[in-house]
Length: 270
Image (cartoon, rainbow, N blue to C red; front, side, top):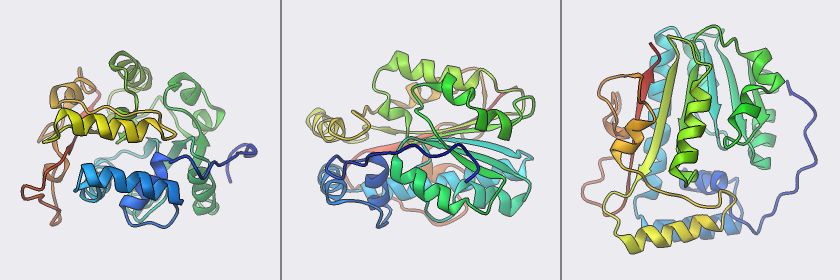
């Protein structure tokens, strides 16, 4: 792999991982019994959890394709999760083979799988990093070597900021990542909202995620999600339910299924 030697990780299969839970929602097989049990608890609270995950993934594909077609050639994906179909580098490089991608995650299994996937793709790398320490990611030798921050970069933060439960910390994380972005760069964000969930359901969902490697979760309002894009030119149609962001395929309409929702949007640095 195109990075420093991997550390000797210890994977605790008894503690749920949000990356492996997400893999389970998407129908993947890279998960343990504890991940499946925790994910099923969330599904019991949020029956459309699988649809939320799939819709988030579809938004990623559309957003990356749009940005690549718009001329973006550098992508920084924070909290990438386990590789599945149509990952960022595959979507971007299908449009422009010269596109460069840095994936960031701190889940050991994610890193192992991503390194294997990218072994023969010198324009795409993965690094071990914690989004709560943005300065360490931005200063990482792999990031600084692979990406040129004097040119536009697409910063991707999909379904990760709700794991930063303190609002001030979440704002700091986004602000720090945005700081080096030059005009022409973009920020792509998605975030869960409480949707139709009542306070008890939100509490039970929070309890499940508190026991995971993420340590907690918090839904935010559309106004709060829009706040992460404050000062940017927000592309049409704005911060919306993800299946409404420039749809080009038939995507799940939830038809009154009770549960939460996921919002997102794309902002341009001007």
